[in-house]
Image (cartoon, rainbow, N blue to C red; front, top):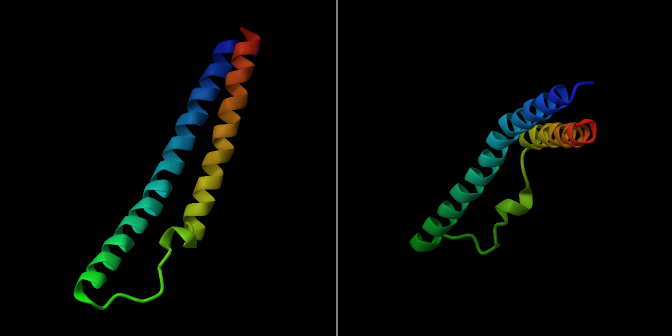
Length: 89
């Protein structure tokens, strides 16, 4: 296989991993930020829950987790294709 095809595959799958994984990661981080703001507001109003809320401990939703796993698999394929590009050239 031509080295340029390996490079194209690496770039394409890398971009695909970013395109699929970035929105899932941002949704996860945005939810954590929003939950922290709610906790601070409730504490300011004196209605905070006595239990510590670990929104990051809950982890990503099933949908986000699925997208992050797909993105990780695509990133792995991109890494293998990049190694193959360097070996072939």
